[in-house]
Picture 1 (cartoon, rainbow, N blue to C red):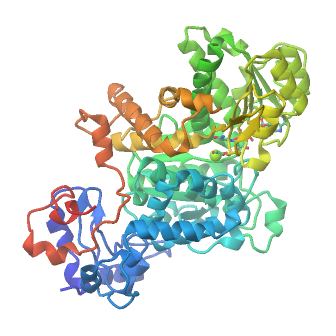
Picture 2 (picture 1 turned 60 degrees about the vertical axis):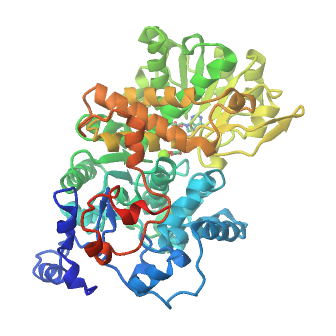
Length: 627
Ligand SMILES: NC(=O)C1=CN([C@@H]2O[C@H](COP(=O)(O)OP(=O)(O)OC[C@H]3O[C@@H](n4cnc5c(N)ncnc54)[C@H](O)[C@@H]3O)[C@@H](O)[C@H]2O)C=CC1
Ligand SMILES: CC(=O)C(=O)O
Ligand SMILES: [Mg+2]
């Protein structure tokens, strides 16, 4: 009954006319591959389908392969019946464990490691071994584990990528694959991808050009898609576009795993990105969400402008960051009683993150009823060359920066700019560690009862100041947040636990709403909506403990609220393509989420003769009886 050839073909019978994926007989695949004209040809081989969307499909994988497959493996949580039916009885010790017992073990195991990178490796290994346990572990312990799978540790993991690389997670598409990007996408074993996070590794956090080592970022971001928003892992694809690196150190590093060449630029690069975008749509459909992450400054803005109305895409560093920072500023209004338009802003940094935030601040001011010119006049931007002024030489100011340039005397030093323009809000997104000097922080405190200071650069080592420095130099009056987490600070007998101004509060919820509704474009409004939704969720108790954001332990609820708001907006504005419009958005979204508990491993084909009528997960007596 379990011989593989007999099982191919059953799937369509069970799934009827519902959304599914055809299984291909391996023998025909081999024949197709043998006759294929290029080494890129591939067939869509799926060895198993337990649950695809809401459809129950027969398992194809038995024996040791079932345990070796991280998506199917449950470790010692397989029941005796499952062990026998799957032919894995005897391949594991006799003990049965519940998922809760396994989670306890994970906690003990991860806590045994002192070094964050070793914890990262433990978690990567867990993901490769038992995907359900990995995501449930992340979900349950997000406060402790987010600094490991995400900033700051993910930065270190990227820097050490050549050393720690073990198993493939995501697709590496190199510029040598030009003309074959679609074929590479077909090599990815999951047919139902709804979201891609892509980087070319040129600006990884504040660490600069890490080339192919940047793969840790899309992997980490998409782990948060699942852990924070419940998006199913098989729907997420991390992609690293490898066009080389301009890092001399990496080119010389024997452990470097990417193309050993300088970055391809110009038309060749642009054509390659165009091919990638077209191939994604051809392979996975036009509503596939493409999140651009950690591209170099010029390319990030160019691609956002180029693709935002022709693909379902957003740039997380520009738009996601804008939303989280503006959410923090909305929340801070409850402390300062000052509107956006009544504030003066200085940005240290005038790149993706800073321009993104400044632009959304302008939108927020216009929303308050102020005209755009007045809104722009409130914002002073400083980059590596000093204040953005209208007298800047051509080539030292980009089109996105121009509207923020002021018709004033040039000033180079941040300290002088803060002294002269007396901002109420100082935002750092420069990747220049420590530029918020004690003197600057003291000036902020001298000019404001409650100065607002955001040190958003990542990882921790690149922050413009530490939380401790911010509180100490402002007599504990600062309203502070940072891109990477800092431990609590006690000053004047009061302990502050600053929140994390990180786009992780935004992108998972936006992605869930966009994917669920089949939204085809992502307008800027969605980020202002997300910012407001996040700010509305901040409680007085959060503000009292020094945070402009809800605690990380409620970030799942934040993602759900943002997704609901995005869903409502998408239907209202005619952007959604999933019909009919659900009445209760929240319930509808919840039905689509990943099940963080184990699914039954009983092959449906085995039980089928006894229960022939179920087609969907909800109908299945097998699955509905599960935890
Ligand atoms: N907290 C969050 O959610 C996010 C944080 N970031 C962080 O923000 C930082 C910057 O990222 P991007 O804006 O994408 O980079 P970018 O390269 O686009 O911009 C960096 C900007 O900082 C300026 N700069 C460099 N040194 C400076 C100095 N000493 N003084 C003033 N300005 C200086 C540069 O001229 C440039 O305008 C990174 O560390 C990144 O990790 C980025 C996205 C999200
Ligand atoms: C958080 C993030 O996206 C960055 O630092 O680039
Ligand atoms: Mg980023």
